[in-house]
Structures are given as structure tokens and as C-alpha cells.
Image 1 (cartoon, rainbow, N blue to C red):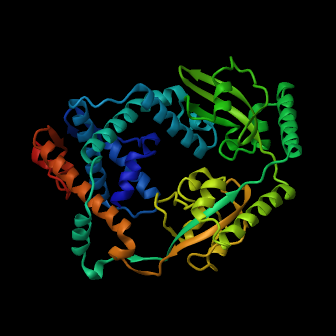
Image 2: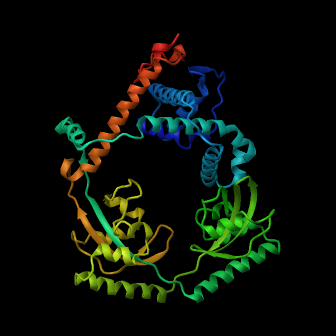
Image 3: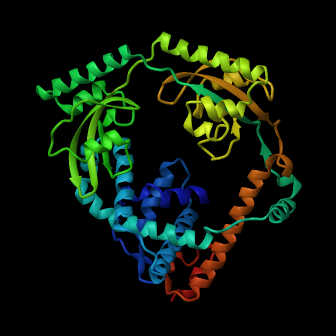
Length: 449
């Protein structure tokens, strides 16, 4: 529950509707920062919406998390911790893009709030700034935390044997990916299709409608091609160059990027931020294109089997996946940041990969197989099963990284707890009497009047 509260309070929940209270009031003060009853009630309703049963103690947990955030903000201002206007705007735009994607369009978001996008941003800009200040302040407290091997062993030794977590099967895998070289014919077809759609818009068709019907960008098509505000460095160079050079509502020429053929229209520009919509047409992969990739990897597979080339060497020299090749072909789990995968996590890199891995032995290479990325693009890959663990209780030999992370988290928590106690002693904190019976983890009520 604590983890859920932290996610709700520090991620996207700042852009949710404030719950209307019959009589809203201040329920806590930390330094010069206030917490309103509606702040707690809004988050409480969100948690109930996640399927949790009603429980008054959740409100106490929510209030304590808010007290902590306000204490961080208060100290950040005392310590002159800075957050630039550009950082605030970038984070605000990122969250707006997320919510526009969730609700369907900018117009629906405005209808939901009964406010314009400009007004919505004005309402939440200060909240976003405070949150970034809190994050920076917390990093000052815990950002340099490291645990030594001795501390990891000590942490593990204090876990009762009957409380050791059970670890599921975990795998480490490597891959050498060869993406098909798209033929000129397929590129010409995609470009011609993009040109046709652009002309239809110039002849009077609505850009948003055409994007919803025909754009092959899964992230923006449902929003009428709208990407939301972005700054320099957020898009591929070809896209960015056009977005920042167009005037008014003009529609760009068709241009090519690594994703395919696009054309775009700038919706609005605010300083160094641009909101644009686009349509993407991706060249299709033909069977001949895929066959070429397979033939190439067949030759690499033969070299691997003859020990003429190591997997690491082959990945670094020949793989088309930039992230993997720089790690010797070993795949990083996008959900955890480690190189370990549980079986059900393999779908995050390829939904069909499980079927190949399940039949392999540790140290074995697969023959070239067709793999698909999350966007549906196909390629041929050679897969290496580097390691596989059996289900077991956690131990230092097999699970050192997990135990190290847990030990580091505990050390950070202790530092934060010590910091909170120290700052409470020198910071004005007042809590409404209705919450004085809460079983807080920290001594907030010591300063209450």
C-alpha cells in the first residue's frame, strides 16, 4: 500500500480532478506550506478506484506522505534548491501528453476539466514545481547512498529464514538482431501513400480525421496525430528541424525518418516548446527483405557454432539493436533495469520469445528466428540463453543484485527517517485535531498545537 500511495502522490495523480468538499479546510501546515482536506480526499477516492476497500487508516497514510512532500519542499526552498521554468514546463507537458493519450484528445481533456489547456497548465504549474523541488531535495538526501558487500551480507543475515522471499524462474538472454533492409519499392509505396494523404488534407480533408484513420504511429493516431508539446532534443532530428521551422498552420512536405514517411502540422508554439500533429506511413517489409536478414544471420550462426566468433563479438559487430549490442547482446529488462527476466516478462521484448527460450539449454544459441518488436516490426534474431535459475528461496549467490537493492532501499529509508525527525524538530508543523489519532511512522504531532 505504501508503494501505491507513493506512486499516486508523485506520478500522474496531480492532474486529477479535485474532489468537491462541502466545506474544504486546511488540515495541516508544514512551514509555509498547507495541506487541504480535499488533497487527501481526492487521493483517497483514487485508491478506492483501484479496487481497495474503504479504510480510514489509508487517509492517515496519505496525509503522512503529503506531510513528507511538504517538508521536502519547505527545506528545498530554505536550501535554495532550484528547478528551472524549462524543467517545470517539460514535466507539465509530459503529463498532459499522458492524460491526453488516456482520455482520447486535447478537446476531451478540456471538456473534462471545463477549462482550456492553458488554464489547466496554469492550475497545475505550481504543483509540478513543488513536486520537482521535492524530488531534487530527496535526491540530496539519498542520491549518494551506496551499500558495501558487507552491508548486503549483514542485511541478508538478519532476515529470518522463514521470511526469505521465493524467487521464480529467472533468465538472462542475449540476441543478435538483423532488421530487414527495406526495398526501394516498398519505400516508394509508403512515400506515395503519405503524399496522397497530404494532398487530400490540402484539398480540404481534416488532418485529425485522416490521422485517426490512416496514421501508423500507434502513440498519436488515436489523438488525431497530436503529439503534445515537446522541446528541442525530444524528437528525431529530421522531425524536430521541420517542427521548429514551420510558420503558422502550414503543412510540411513529406519527409523520411528512421520510422518511415511523415508530414506534420504545427498546432501551437510557446517559446521553445512546440505542439504538432503528424501522420506516419511505415514502409512494409516484404518476404524478400526478411529472407535477406535470415541468410545473413545463418552465416553468423555457422561462425558461432564453429567457435570462430563469440556471441559478444557478433552482437557488437552485427546486431541492429543499438541498446543490446553495446551490452554484448545481453538484453536489459525494461521493467526492472536488470538483465534478469521472469518468464512472463519476456513479452515486453517479444510476445513469441517464450516459445523459443522454453526449449533451449543454458549456453545454447537458437537458429535465426523471426521476432517482433512491440510496434509489430519483424526481424530475424539469434537468441542466446545465457542463464536460467530454478525456483528457490532467495540466497546471496543467486540473488545478490535483488538483495543489494533491498539493502540499499532500507539504507535510504533509514536516512530519510533520520532526516525527517531532524527537520521536524526545527520546522513548524501543525496537524488538525481530527488526524491526531493517526498512527504515523514519524513524530509529526510533536509540533502540533
